[in-house]
Amino acid sequence: MQRGFSLIELIVALVAAGIVAAGLMLWMARPLQALQDSHGQAAAIDQAERIGSRLSAELPQALPNSVRIACNGRCLEFLPVVAWGDYRSATPGDTLDFAVSDDRFDVLMPMSAVPQPGMQVVINNLNALPSGSGSAYSEDANNNRSSIVAGSTLQQIRMAPKQFPAPSAAQRFFIVDRPVSWFCQPAAGGGELRRYSGYPVQGVQPANPSSGDVFAGGIVDCAFDLTAPDLVTLRLQVGGPGGAQMGLLTQVALDHTP
Image (cartoon, rainbow, N blue to C red; front, side, top):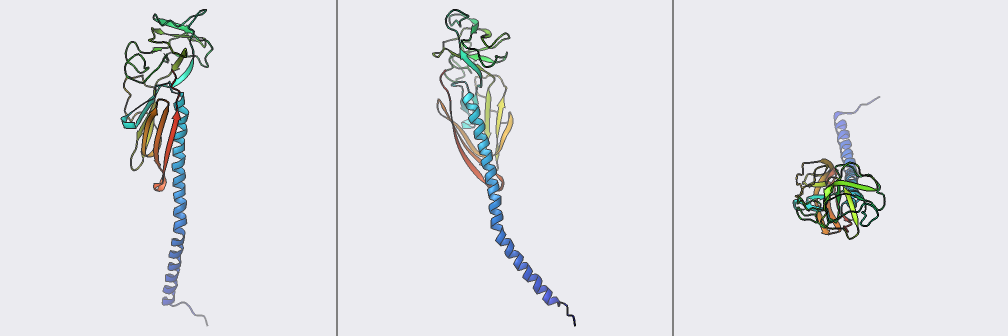
């Protein structure tokens, strides 16, 4: 004779199954949470390393003594060097004359790239001040930069007429492009790191964090610091999925010999 389940037996079976399922869920919860945390930590690490790698690649290309920091450590700016070389200071050849307004000079060894109009030639950059004769950011007439004009070659620089204030002890010139700025906007829920470039040289460093393109998100905290004339320090806290965070301390050595 066949006998079916009674209602009480069915209820007991369902309750038992629920208890087993709950136990399995509790048993699996920690491994699943650990897996999720590891993914979040990995994402935060990747983001931090990406930021550190980009800055470590860019900052060594800065014009000596052009890195400057504002916004209480949230903004960093520099002038990127696209080419450099030694100017001719003695004949034969077209020398750079510091006693008069000059519009061209020969390069001792050919450069790696032809300077383009809109770029600037800078000689003897000593600081990043908004005025004075030793800064490429200076808005004074006796600053140390001049605009490249058409006709430059790998062997000769042509520029707007300029009497440079002082020669370089290394007999060196630098060709720079327009400035680059990094803006940091940290937030508890994850802020942004932006990169802004292509704007004109200005005496005062721009401090508009909404400018430029978003390079990275999840920025919980950050600070730039020029700890020495030749050393930039970045302290960064990056957040990832699930609340994971990763700290980064990056230091980049700079060439400050003008």
